[in-house]
Image (cartoon, rainbow, N blue to C red; front, side, top):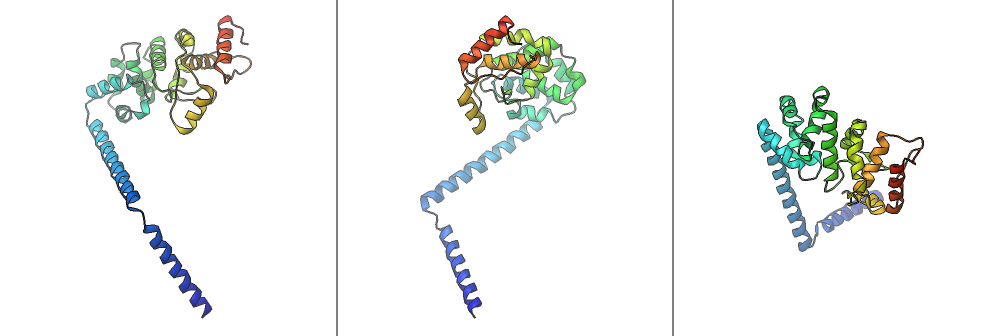
Amino acid sequence: MKNILFVCSLLALTASCGKGMHRVPPEQRKQQQQFQAQQEALDKLGKATEEKFKKMPVPELLAELEGAAETGREPFNAPAFREIITRKDVVEPLVKSITTPSRKEYFKLMALKKLDASAYAKIPRRQGAEILIDALARSETFNAWGIPNHYWESSAKAIVEYGADAVPGLEKLLNDKRPAPVWGSEEAMIYARYQFRVCDYALALLHEITPTRNKVELPVTPAERDALIASYRTGQIQ
């Protein structure tokens, strides 16, 4: 009997809690409904955008890639980039379309690298390096490249792979003290601590290309990093 009473009490308590959970204040319920509606609208817009690019002819897709590259953001956030790397008929058009050493070729170059290594190798090394370095220098946010001392993304790794062909362009950026912000919770915390600049990315990549006997980690303060840049220029870093 006691067990039956206990079970009945437990069921009554559960039902009571359940009712309490559903008693959401009207204002909060309205906010939840608004958020859900906004999320559904965003999902719908995203699907429509993906479908639009899926139907897009290759010449238009290449133009979209150029426009997206000029925004200073990341390839992986561009619908045109996500679409083109799924196509099998774009390799030759990509190769033919990469004609300058400027940032507008950036997404096309990285798409080509992802799609076909042999076709990617047809782009002259100096030109490829200049495309990527121009994109790095003119980035609005730097998530596409990674974070010095922490990790490199595929775009930064591609610069390092160009080796000596990338050195002149990176050395020109050693004077560029513009901020190099990143987004994301953990990334933003790292940036808040180091306040990395374009010149810091250039220095870190130069050390990846020409490793020293002792691994160089960039110091926290900009003044210390400026001293490292000065040492690099005089060849004092061993």
